[in-house]
Length: 386
Image 1 (cartoon, rainbow, N blue to C red):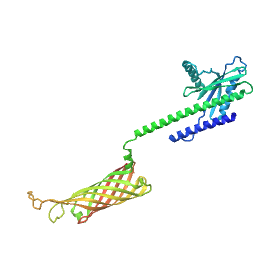
Image 2 (image 1 turned 60 degrees about the horizontal axis):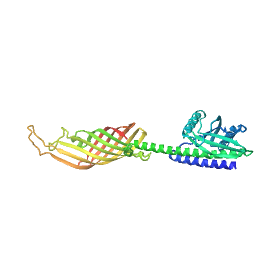
Image 3 (image 1 turned 135 degrees about the horizontal axis):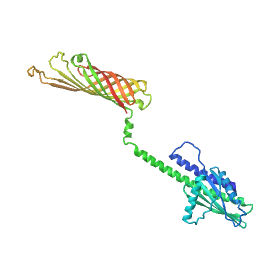
Protein backbone atom coordinates (compact mmCIF):
# COMPACT_ATOMS: atom_id res chain seq x y z
CA UNK A 1 0.00 0.00 0.00
CA UNK A 2 2.82 2.40 0.90
CA UNK A 3 4.66 1.77 -2.35
CA UNK A 4 1.50 2.21 -4.43
CA UNK A 5 0.75 5.60 -2.85
CA UNK A 6 4.30 6.84 -3.39
CA UNK A 7 4.25 5.66 -7.03
CA UNK A 8 0.97 7.54 -7.61
CA UNK A 9 2.43 10.68 -5.99
CA UNK A 10 5.56 10.49 -8.17
CA UNK A 11 3.45 10.03 -11.32
CA UNK A 12 1.23 13.05 -10.56
CA UNK A 13 4.24 15.21 -9.67
CA UNK A 14 6.11 14.20 -12.85
CA UNK A 15 3.10 14.90 -15.12
CA UNK A 16 2.58 18.36 -13.63
CA UNK A 17 6.29 19.12 -13.82
CA UNK A 18 6.60 18.00 -17.48
CA UNK A 19 3.52 19.97 -18.55
CA UNK A 20 4.81 23.12 -16.88
CA UNK A 21 8.24 22.69 -18.48
CA UNK A 22 6.73 22.08 -21.94
CA UNK A 23 4.52 25.16 -21.73
CA UNK A 24 7.43 27.24 -20.54
CA UNK A 25 9.76 25.81 -23.20
CA UNK A 26 7.40 26.71 -26.05
CA UNK A 27 7.51 30.35 -25.12
CA UNK A 28 11.10 30.53 -23.96
CA UNK A 29 13.28 27.70 -25.33
CA UNK A 30 16.21 27.12 -22.97
CA UNK A 31 19.22 24.82 -23.13
CA UNK A 32 19.07 21.67 -21.03
CA UNK A 33 20.23 22.45 -17.49
CA UNK A 34 19.85 20.47 -14.27
CA UNK A 35 16.51 21.15 -12.57
CA UNK A 36 16.88 22.52 -9.05
CA UNK A 37 15.02 20.37 -6.53
CA UNK A 38 12.63 21.99 -4.07
CA UNK A 39 14.01 21.88 -0.53
CA UNK A 40 11.75 20.82 2.34
CA UNK A 41 12.87 21.38 5.94
CA UNK A 42 10.95 19.45 8.62
CA UNK A 43 11.16 20.75 12.20
CA UNK A 44 10.93 18.39 15.15
CA UNK A 45 7.31 17.80 16.12
CA UNK A 46 5.80 19.15 19.30
CA UNK A 47 4.64 16.46 21.74
CA UNK A 48 1.25 17.57 23.08
CA UNK A 49 0.72 14.37 25.07
CA UNK A 50 -0.06 14.52 28.78
CA UNK A 51 3.07 12.48 29.56
CA UNK A 52 6.56 12.44 28.07
CA UNK A 53 6.39 8.68 27.45
CA UNK A 54 6.25 9.21 23.70
CA UNK A 55 8.65 12.18 23.52
CA UNK A 56 11.00 10.10 21.37
CA UNK A 57 8.52 10.36 18.49
CA UNK A 58 9.33 14.08 18.26
CA UNK A 59 12.34 13.25 16.07
CA UNK A 60 11.32 9.84 14.73
CA UNK A 61 8.22 11.12 12.98
CA UNK A 62 10.06 13.96 11.10
CA UNK A 63 12.93 11.61 10.16
CA UNK A 64 10.50 9.05 8.76
CA UNK A 65 8.60 11.71 6.83
CA UNK A 66 11.85 13.17 5.42
CA UNK A 67 12.99 9.71 4.31
CA UNK A 68 9.75 9.04 2.44
CA UNK A 69 9.79 12.50 0.79
CA UNK A 70 13.38 11.99 -0.40
CA UNK A 71 12.36 8.64 -1.84
CA UNK A 72 10.19 10.47 -4.39
CA UNK A 73 13.39 11.86 -5.90
CA UNK A 74 12.20 15.35 -6.84
CA UNK A 75 12.67 16.93 -3.41
CA UNK A 76 15.44 17.51 -0.96
CA UNK A 77 14.17 16.84 2.55
CA UNK A 78 15.97 17.27 5.84
CA UNK A 79 15.05 17.63 9.49
CA UNK A 80 15.95 20.49 11.79
CA UNK A 81 16.21 19.91 15.58
CA UNK A 82 14.03 22.80 16.65
CA UNK A 83 10.46 22.53 17.92
CA UNK A 84 8.01 25.07 16.52
CA UNK A 85 4.46 25.14 17.79
CA UNK A 86 1.77 24.03 15.38
CA UNK A 87 -0.57 26.93 14.50
CA UNK A 88 -4.22 26.01 14.43
CA UNK A 89 -6.23 27.09 11.38
CA UNK A 90 -8.58 29.07 13.64
CA UNK A 91 -5.72 31.24 14.96
CA UNK A 92 -6.10 35.01 14.78
CA UNK A 93 -4.60 37.10 12.02
CA UNK A 94 -2.10 38.55 14.49
CA UNK A 95 -0.94 35.06 15.49
CA UNK A 96 -0.59 34.06 11.85
CA UNK A 97 1.52 37.15 11.15
CA UNK A 98 3.77 36.31 14.10
CA UNK A 99 4.03 32.69 12.89
CA UNK A 100 4.96 33.85 9.38
CA UNK A 101 7.55 36.27 10.78
CA UNK A 102 9.11 33.48 12.86
CA UNK A 103 9.40 31.10 9.90
CA UNK A 104 10.77 33.76 7.58
CA UNK A 105 13.51 34.42 10.12
CA UNK A 106 14.18 30.69 10.36
CA UNK A 107 14.51 30.56 6.57
CA UNK A 108 17.56 32.83 6.77
CA UNK A 109 19.28 29.89 8.41
CA UNK A 110 17.76 26.82 6.73
CA UNK A 111 17.27 28.26 3.19
CA UNK A 112 14.18 26.20 2.37
CA UNK A 113 11.42 26.32 -0.23
CA UNK A 114 8.94 24.71 2.13
CA UNK A 115 8.91 24.20 5.90
CA UNK A 116 6.94 21.51 7.67
CA UNK A 117 5.74 22.10 11.24
CA UNK A 118 3.83 19.46 13.21
CA UNK A 119 2.59 18.23 16.53
CA UNK A 120 1.18 15.00 17.91
CA UNK A 121 -0.46 13.77 21.01
CA UNK A 122 -1.12 10.33 22.44
CA UNK A 123 -4.33 9.66 24.28
CA UNK A 124 -4.66 6.18 25.58
CA UNK A 125 -4.04 3.90 22.64
CA UNK A 126 -4.65 6.64 20.04
CA UNK A 127 -2.11 9.01 18.39
CA UNK A 128 -3.10 12.08 16.35
CA UNK A 129 -0.62 13.89 14.10
CA UNK A 130 -1.26 17.44 12.87
CA UNK A 131 0.97 19.03 10.17
CA UNK A 132 1.16 22.22 8.20
CA UNK A 133 3.36 23.51 5.38
CA UNK A 134 4.77 26.98 5.04
CA UNK A 135 5.44 28.08 1.43
CA UNK A 136 8.41 30.43 1.86
CA UNK A 137 8.15 32.16 -1.50
CA UNK A 138 4.41 32.82 -1.26
CA UNK A 139 4.46 33.24 2.54
CA UNK A 140 1.43 30.96 2.75
CA UNK A 141 0.42 28.46 5.40
CA UNK A 142 -0.93 25.17 4.00
CA UNK A 143 -2.80 22.90 6.42
CA UNK A 144 -2.74 19.11 6.09
CA UNK A 145 -5.63 17.03 7.42
CA UNK A 146 -4.95 15.36 10.78
CA UNK A 147 -3.93 11.73 10.84
CA UNK A 148 -5.27 9.49 13.60
CA UNK A 149 -4.57 5.88 14.43
CA UNK A 150 -4.26 3.42 17.27
CA UNK A 151 -0.79 3.47 18.77
CA UNK A 152 0.80 0.07 18.53
CA UNK A 153 3.02 -1.68 16.05
CA UNK A 154 0.90 0.05 13.38
CA UNK A 155 2.39 3.43 14.32
CA UNK A 156 4.78 3.25 11.38
CA UNK A 157 1.90 2.68 8.99
CA UNK A 158 0.21 5.71 10.52
CA UNK A 159 3.35 7.76 9.94
CA UNK A 160 3.32 6.52 6.35
CA UNK A 161 -0.27 7.70 5.95
CA UNK A 162 0.69 11.09 7.35
CA UNK A 163 3.59 11.23 4.91
CA UNK A 164 1.30 10.46 1.99
CA UNK A 165 -1.00 13.30 2.94
CA UNK A 166 1.99 15.60 3.37
CA UNK A 167 3.30 14.59 -0.07
CA UNK A 168 -0.10 15.28 -1.62
CA UNK A 169 -0.19 18.76 -0.10
CA UNK A 170 3.42 19.37 -1.06
CA UNK A 171 2.82 18.34 -4.68
CA UNK A 172 -0.18 20.63 -4.88
CA UNK A 173 1.82 23.55 -3.48
CA UNK A 174 4.68 22.93 -5.91
CA UNK A 175 2.27 22.65 -8.84
CA UNK A 176 0.59 25.93 -7.91
CA UNK A 177 3.97 27.61 -7.55
CA UNK A 178 5.19 26.32 -10.92
CA UNK A 179 1.97 27.37 -12.63
CA UNK A 180 2.33 30.83 -11.11
CA UNK A 181 5.96 31.02 -12.28
CA UNK A 182 5.00 29.80 -15.75
CA UNK A 183 2.27 32.44 -16.01
CA UNK A 184 4.65 35.12 -14.73
CA UNK A 185 7.32 34.00 -17.21
CA UNK A 186 4.81 34.01 -20.08
CA UNK A 187 3.58 37.47 -19.08
CA UNK A 188 7.17 38.73 -18.84
CA UNK A 189 7.99 37.24 -22.25
CA UNK A 190 4.90 38.82 -23.78
CA UNK A 191 5.78 42.18 -22.22
CA UNK A 192 9.36 41.88 -23.48
CA UNK A 193 8.11 41.03 -26.98
CA UNK A 194 5.77 44.02 -26.94
CA UNK A 195 8.61 46.25 -25.78
CA UNK A 196 10.88 44.85 -28.51
CA UNK A 197 8.23 45.50 -31.16
CA UNK A 198 7.68 49.02 -29.85
CA UNK A 199 11.39 49.76 -30.31
CA UNK A 200 11.53 48.49 -33.90
CA UNK A 201 11.88 51.37 -36.33
CA UNK A 202 8.89 51.81 -38.68
CA UNK A 203 11.43 52.11 -41.48
CA UNK A 204 12.95 48.67 -40.86
CA UNK A 205 10.89 47.00 -43.60
CA UNK A 206 11.94 49.61 -46.12
CA UNK A 207 15.58 49.31 -45.02
CA UNK A 208 15.52 45.51 -45.42
CA UNK A 209 14.09 45.95 -48.91
CA UNK A 210 16.90 48.23 -50.09
CA UNK A 211 19.69 46.58 -48.07
CA UNK A 212 22.67 45.78 -50.32
CA UNK A 213 22.00 48.58 -52.82
CA UNK A 214 24.88 50.96 -53.55
CA UNK A 215 24.16 54.58 -54.47
CA UNK A 216 27.00 56.41 -56.19
CA UNK A 217 28.13 59.46 -58.09
CA UNK A 218 30.89 59.56 -60.72
CA UNK A 219 32.81 62.43 -62.26
CA UNK A 220 34.78 62.06 -65.48
CA UNK A 221 36.11 63.58 -68.69
CA UNK A 222 34.47 63.02 -72.10
CA UNK A 223 36.78 62.48 -75.06
CA UNK A 224 35.20 62.39 -78.55
CA UNK A 225 36.39 60.34 -81.55
CA UNK A 226 36.13 60.82 -85.32
CA UNK A 227 34.40 63.88 -86.73
CA UNK A 228 32.88 64.60 -83.32
CA UNK A 229 36.39 64.75 -81.87
CA UNK A 230 37.35 67.38 -84.42
CA UNK A 231 34.20 69.37 -83.76
CA UNK A 232 33.60 69.33 -79.99
CA UNK A 233 35.68 70.17 -76.97
CA UNK A 234 36.25 67.61 -74.26
CA UNK A 235 33.54 67.90 -71.59
CA UNK A 236 32.96 67.24 -67.92
CA UNK A 237 30.76 64.18 -67.34
CA UNK A 238 28.57 63.52 -64.28
CA UNK A 239 26.79 60.23 -63.58
CA UNK A 240 24.45 59.12 -60.81
CA UNK A 241 24.10 55.37 -60.42
CA UNK A 242 22.40 52.60 -58.47
CA UNK A 243 24.19 49.26 -58.19
CA UNK A 244 22.95 45.93 -56.81
CA UNK A 245 24.82 42.63 -56.55
CA UNK A 246 22.65 39.56 -57.18
CA UNK A 247 24.75 37.65 -54.63
CA UNK A 248 22.63 39.43 -52.00
CA UNK A 249 19.77 37.24 -53.22
CA UNK A 250 21.72 34.05 -53.83
CA UNK A 251 25.35 33.82 -52.65
CA UNK A 252 27.86 32.94 -55.33
CA UNK A 253 26.17 34.68 -58.28
CA UNK A 254 28.87 36.84 -60.01
CA UNK A 255 26.37 39.18 -61.69
CA UNK A 256 24.99 42.57 -60.79
CA UNK A 257 22.62 45.12 -62.29
CA UNK A 258 22.93 48.88 -62.34
CA UNK A 259 21.09 51.93 -63.49
CA UNK A 260 22.80 55.15 -64.59
CA UNK A 261 21.81 58.73 -65.20
CA UNK A 262 24.40 60.55 -67.36
CA UNK A 263 24.82 64.20 -68.18
CA UNK A 264 27.39 66.31 -70.04
CA UNK A 265 27.44 69.41 -72.26
CA UNK A 266 30.01 70.88 -74.62
CA UNK A 267 30.41 73.24 -77.56
CA UNK A 268 32.43 73.39 -80.77
CA UNK A 269 36.14 74.13 -80.74
CA UNK A 270 37.29 77.61 -81.75
CA UNK A 271 39.57 76.01 -84.33
CA UNK A 272 36.76 74.05 -85.96
CA UNK A 273 36.21 75.10 -89.59
CA UNK A 274 32.46 75.32 -89.76
CA UNK A 275 30.74 75.18 -93.11
CA UNK A 276 28.15 77.68 -91.96
CA UNK A 277 30.44 79.58 -89.53
CA UNK A 278 28.09 78.89 -86.63
CA UNK A 279 28.98 77.61 -83.17
CA UNK A 280 27.16 74.60 -81.79
CA UNK A 281 26.28 73.55 -78.28
CA UNK A 282 25.82 69.85 -77.55
CA UNK A 283 23.88 68.68 -74.46
CA UNK A 284 23.39 65.04 -73.48
CA UNK A 285 20.96 63.72 -70.81
CA UNK A 286 20.43 59.99 -70.69
CA UNK A 287 19.54 56.97 -68.59
CA UNK A 288 20.67 53.38 -69.09
CA UNK A 289 20.24 49.89 -67.66
CA UNK A 290 23.39 47.77 -67.37
CA UNK A 291 24.27 44.12 -66.88
CA UNK A 292 27.48 43.65 -64.88
CA UNK A 293 29.86 40.72 -64.47
CA UNK A 294 32.08 40.81 -61.38
CA UNK A 295 35.57 39.36 -61.09
CA UNK A 296 35.93 39.16 -57.31
CA UNK A 297 39.48 38.96 -55.96
CA UNK A 298 38.68 39.68 -52.31
CA UNK A 299 35.45 40.54 -50.47
CA UNK A 300 36.51 44.20 -50.68
CA UNK A 301 37.92 44.37 -54.22
CA UNK A 302 36.56 43.45 -57.64
CA UNK A 303 36.82 44.33 -61.31
CA UNK A 304 33.51 44.86 -63.09
CA UNK A 305 32.75 44.58 -66.81
CA UNK A 306 29.37 45.85 -67.94
CA UNK A 307 27.31 46.46 -71.04
CA UNK A 308 24.29 48.73 -71.11
CA UNK A 309 21.66 50.28 -73.30
CA UNK A 310 19.71 53.46 -72.72
CA UNK A 311 17.78 56.39 -74.12
CA UNK A 312 19.30 59.88 -74.38
CA UNK A 313 17.81 63.30 -74.93
CA UNK A 314 20.31 64.99 -77.29
CA UNK A 315 19.99 68.71 -77.87
CA UNK A 316 22.13 70.50 -80.47
CA UNK A 317 21.89 74.27 -80.59
CA UNK A 318 23.22 76.12 -83.63
CA UNK A 319 23.90 79.64 -82.52
CA UNK A 320 23.40 82.69 -84.71
CA UNK A 321 26.60 84.48 -85.71
CA UNK A 322 27.22 88.21 -85.27
CA UNK A 323 29.95 90.45 -86.63
CA UNK A 324 32.06 92.80 -84.60
CA UNK A 325 29.20 95.29 -84.55
CA UNK A 326 26.78 92.65 -83.18
CA UNK A 327 24.97 92.52 -86.48
CA UNK A 328 23.48 89.10 -87.19
CA UNK A 329 25.15 87.70 -90.27
CA UNK A 330 23.67 84.14 -90.10
CA UNK A 331 20.22 82.61 -89.83
CA UNK A 332 18.56 82.70 -86.43
CA UNK A 333 19.57 80.11 -83.80
CA UNK A 334 18.04 76.67 -84.24
CA UNK A 335 17.55 73.81 -81.80
CA UNK A 336 17.60 70.15 -82.73
CA UNK A 337 16.16 68.04 -79.94
CA UNK A 338 15.77 64.27 -80.30
CA UNK A 339 15.57 61.03 -78.34
CA UNK A 340 18.21 58.55 -79.37
CA UNK A 341 19.37 55.13 -78.17
CA UNK A 342 22.89 54.84 -76.87
CA UNK A 343 25.14 52.02 -75.76
CA UNK A 344 27.98 51.81 -73.28
CA UNK A 345 30.73 49.32 -72.45
CA UNK A 346 32.45 49.85 -69.10
CA UNK A 347 35.41 48.39 -67.23
CA UNK A 348 35.97 49.49 -63.63
CA UNK A 349 37.84 48.70 -60.42
CA UNK A 350 35.87 48.81 -57.18
CA UNK A 351 37.20 49.05 -53.64
CA UNK A 352 35.05 48.79 -50.49
CA UNK A 353 35.98 50.25 -47.12
CA UNK A 354 33.13 49.25 -44.87
CA UNK A 355 30.06 50.63 -46.62
CA UNK A 356 32.06 53.15 -48.66
CA UNK A 357 32.70 52.29 -52.32
CA UNK A 358 35.58 53.80 -54.31
CA UNK A 359 35.37 53.30 -58.06
CA UNK A 360 37.62 54.11 -61.00
CA UNK A 361 37.14 53.12 -64.62
CA UNK A 362 36.55 53.97 -68.24
CA UNK A 363 33.65 53.51 -70.62
CA UNK A 364 33.17 53.55 -74.38
CA UNK A 365 29.86 54.98 -75.61
CA UNK A 366 27.97 55.21 -78.89
CA UNK A 367 25.05 57.58 -79.49
CA UNK A 368 22.87 56.25 -82.27
CA UNK A 369 22.09 59.41 -84.27
CA UNK A 370 22.65 60.28 -87.92
CA UNK A 371 26.41 60.70 -87.60
CA UNK A 372 26.91 58.05 -84.81
CA UNK A 373 28.80 59.96 -82.12
CA UNK A 374 31.54 57.92 -80.40
CA UNK A 375 33.12 59.00 -77.12
CA UNK A 376 34.86 57.62 -74.04
CA UNK A 377 34.71 58.63 -70.39
CA UNK A 378 37.48 58.19 -67.85
CA UNK A 379 35.95 58.64 -64.42
CA UNK A 380 36.34 58.41 -60.66
CA UNK A 381 33.46 57.83 -58.25
CA UNK A 382 32.26 57.33 -54.70
CA UNK A 383 29.32 55.30 -53.45
CA UNK A 384 27.61 54.15 -50.28
CA UNK A 385 26.34 50.59 -49.81
CA UNK A 386 23.29 50.24 -47.56
